[in-house]
Length: 142
Image 1 (cartoon, one colour):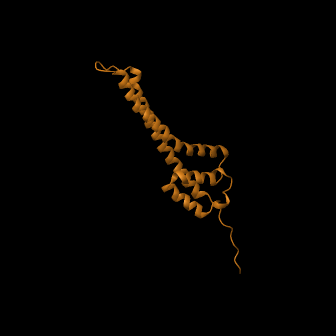
Image 2 (spheres, rainbow, N blue to C red):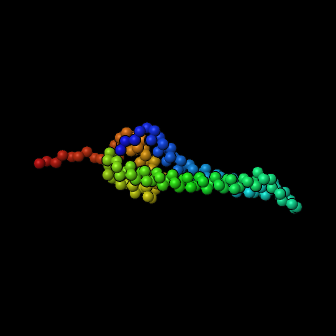
């Protein structure tokens, strides 16, 4: 199954994004939590009236919303990529059956290893490397 260069780059960037987006979402989560702490520290410096500025009070909901959106985007993208990889593995006849079976099982148990491995071996390259190709048929004697 051949893909054009633009599709290959898109699949590669989407695969990379599924690994980077959780870290970005965690950064938004920490910013939201520290935003609450900063809002309390700035608005309530001591005893007395606690009146946070409106922009500081909006920081937590906005960062929390960004966190939730990034997590949902990561889950959707991961599911879509998993479906794409399974379909591609099923339709790809240029790789060996053993490599295809191993990467299929790997997509269930260790997708963070199997996806980049299969992407490099069968999607990015025009033909699979020697270790992923089927063995040559050995002629039998009549």
